[in-house]
Length: 412
Image 1 (tube, rainbow, N blue to C red):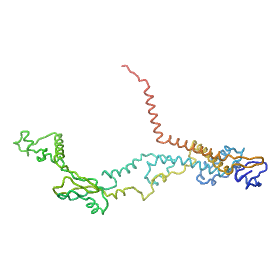
Image 2: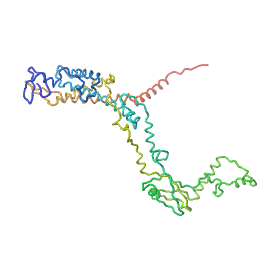
Image 3: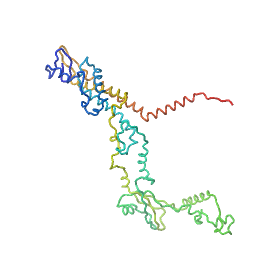
Image 4: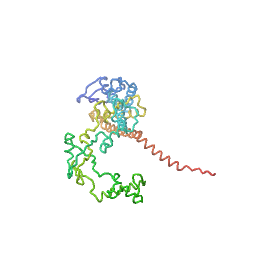
């Protein structure tokens, strides 16, 4: 008896269609249930990814027979045909390849990001060694632009003419509007300082500096000409005198300083003479244009375009194939459960038959989740980070073991 795609054996081979009994041939029944064999695998899968892989075709056909027996054939009818099995096996292989590729992409994206896809080629099944240092340096260039040590934004230098008695200046108007086509500028450095203390050590009017005549007089050589007589002093004396000059300027004089707000600068103290004050600045628009793009060759930019493809099935090892078989069986259960869930109860002479579609689907979904979790855990443990952690733990345990080894005592 059969309702659409669900069938059981009875003495007179009948199917139930639109709630009417109708005789059918054995050929019609084989179209909606597993007959015990199947057609050629090549060309019969859904995506045709592995049509040229002989190992895939052999394992796919063998997997179909194995899964049918696991589902109860021939004791019970299996409402699946060969194409269902082939599609499920192909999906299981793709799922395995997807999980492995996802893990490799996460591990390797930092090492290959920014490289051209042509130079990378197909990365599936290839070992990738790299630190990603070049990518880090590329990112760090923007920080270098901010502190003036490199990068992709030029620091420009110019000056403004400081006028006697004028304390406030609009740098945006003087530089940004006049020299940078009204673009917004950002001042990075202002050269507004007193002459360095090292240049005023021998200044007798700096109050803490010294002159040749003063030094010679203090040491009793005032009668000698400083042009032909020399005095050697230790370097720390020069350093102490420079520090004394700077403290004197800070305490007794108005400190040379400035403040900038919204590109408007105020100078301290009020200028008493005219001079050129130099500045370094950047154009803010150029900072926004420092983002790297590549309009030429296609590059590895993100998770979506790293060149990973489906694994070649014949190159997958036996543990991987066993995982594929188990996941394949779970998919078959899911498909069979979906088919049997179309009708829960089938009336037969003398009673009803309840199908197990819901239970099959629930069991299949749980198994699929468990298989995926196990595979991801295995990939994490076998990856470079997992292996480094294991090596570290082994080294620590080895050190603990060596501590308990008796130390030999030699007597001379």
